[in-house]
Amino acid sequence: MEHPKNDDYIKGRGAQINPTHRFAEHAYDSEESQLVESEDEKTPTNYIEVHPKSILNKVISPDIPAEYSMNPYQGCEHGCVYCYARNTHPYWGYSAGLEFEQNILVKKNAPQLLEAKLKSKNWVAKPIMFSGNTDCYQPIEKKLQITRQMLEVLWKYRHPVSMITRNKLILRDLDILTKMAKNNLVHVAVTITTLNEKLRQKLEPRASSIANRLETVEELAKNGIPVFVMMAPIIPSLNDHEILGLTKKVASLGANGIGHTIVRLNDDVALIFEDWLRKNIPDRADKILNQIADCHGGELGSTKIGARMSGQGNYADMIHQQFRVARNQFLKDVEMPPYNLELYEQMKNPQLKLF
Image 1: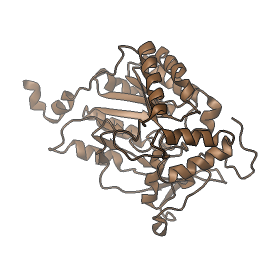
Image 2 (image 1 turned 90 degrees about the horizontal axis):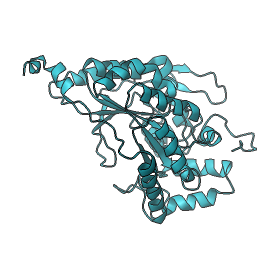
Image 3 (image 1 turned 120 degrees about the horizontal axis):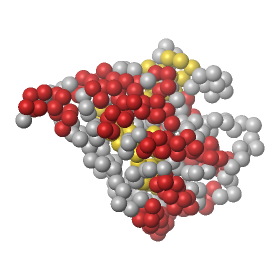
Image 4 (image 1 turned 180 degrees about the vertical axis):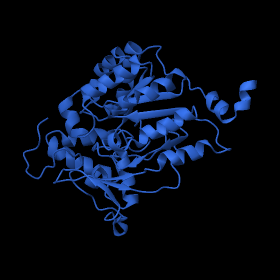
């Protein structure tokens, strides 16, 4: 894929527009909250410290295999153009478009909030998911290390956690992850949408390269850390032809499994994605949009529980069938190990060790 022949195209960003949102009149005033600013003069990234009172989110959707999630950052500099989390940014007073990538809310008190929760008498061990909304290893994590501090808290209390990321930065924390893996306390998922680096650069402009993500899968596996690959999302006529090849590749690197979702373009994400598509792949834009709609009952997006992430219809069925074939051929009888929930209870209640 070549960059569009357009001087106004913003290189290094996914979204090219800022749709007006329904909370625009309540836009967040970040003048005095700005933490740092990037050196990108055209589209600077602002990191804004916020002060939440809690860090765990109860997951109420049956489509997501977790009971709780936590996000040390809101907004994501990776800039994945299709990201469903974009639609949460208007609640903070920002657009789901370019501002989702430029205005990153930072929760520096997240480690303290997490420890307070784990010390609570009423808390019962259950896996918590990192990055249910935005990536916990996005670029600013290298400097702030909030995710690492939270991992240290989890290890201190021997509490199970799952993580999902598109960033090689997770390898920085191999020392903690290795200890947790030896005690069955961690699962890691690495998202790899495509093996086509040129496509990745346009779809996910500031996420790690495909080569670095493949290396991440391999290094995690070599260190005994259970690693799952998410080919998410599948975008018809863009990356669906890579299912077998990508599965074969990650299986050879030691992945414990592979999963997928089908792209859904709800609310402002539909505007952002279509704008991106017509600027980058104008000759196939209508075909891709029509096939996405075919997976969601004629609409670009879906809110239907049980189908919104997997899609429905003939095209979606063909995608699911390809994954069944791929798993059977390359990842048969491979699975993620169960979590150890007992260590946390022992750390919390030392007297249990006597029994």
